[in-house]
Image (cartoon, rainbow, N blue to C red; front, side, top):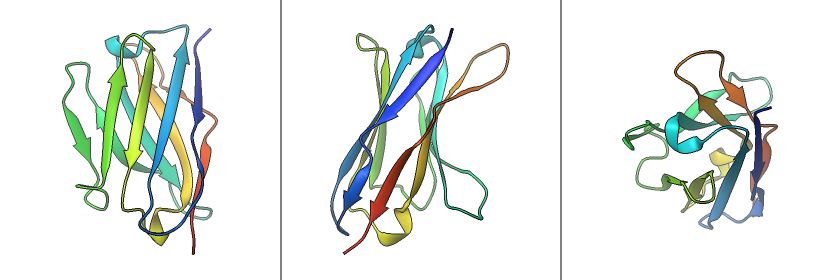
Length: 116
């Protein structure tokens, strides 16, 4: 059974940093494309960052230069380092695993609130 569990969200002031973690079980993150999405109530879920099986990364324009996605094979986890956080980064952040075959797997989400 595949499971993704996010953690690391919380309340942070503008300009601060957080690191989100996505721990996977039942599947190897290193063999699959992974990504982070976020969603604000009333809006569609939007892609924030992604990493391919080969390790290539891609970022939404709104987070380029501030967020970094990484993967740890030994810990079977994916991370999202978020620096210089802005008020508009407030959202629920979701981890997604995209296998070559079959449906995507999603975590339950972790709340990030940027507020002064």
